[in-house]
Length: 227
Image (cartoon, rainbow, N blue to C red; front, side, top):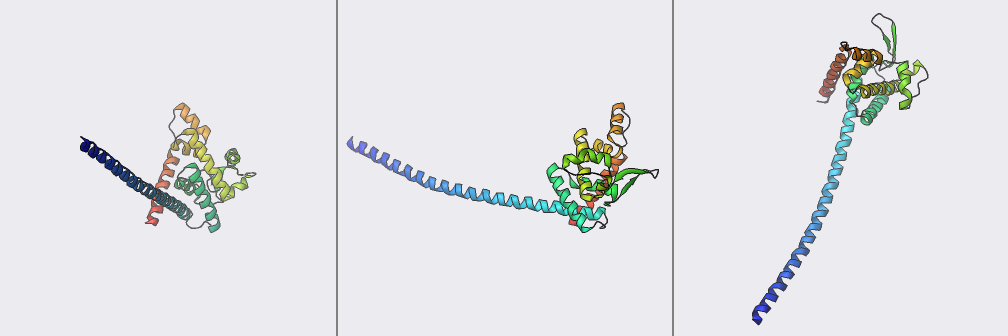
């Protein structure tokens, strides 16, 4: 009986020692695994940051190439650099596709910061600059984006025109929750669109269709240059 008890005690002690040994070994391995996981996570963060920076560079490149295309390389380098930087910041901050803004600029002014709008009759429409924004509309949104507009001549400043024109379009998108309606209002005015929506009259979709075609053509040309 004594031998059996001693044998049992020995087995228990040996088992306990083995378990402790395995636990210590496991703890060491666990710490190694934790350290390795930390290294992997740190590398993943670095890779993600590199990819993010790469995407930013690519976006800026696309904007710059788009400005070249729509202006047929006639936009002064200084203006192009300022506009590319501003449009990049706007597209990042407000999550709007910069190519859409470029499509509006392409149709409205072909990248000419001094463009003056005309009605089909030949009379002046009052639309000015890159995005052909009217002075009255510019005044409504200028303060909200920190742009000082004191006269119509200010809209010939490419940077101010881009900031105000984009802010106005973003305001329309927020109002209608619909890009088609926003672009129609950008073209014919809020009052005209609202009246048509109230009366159920057919909407003038020509401008929207033109901008969407410009958008697709511009995007295709930009991406073909990349390839």
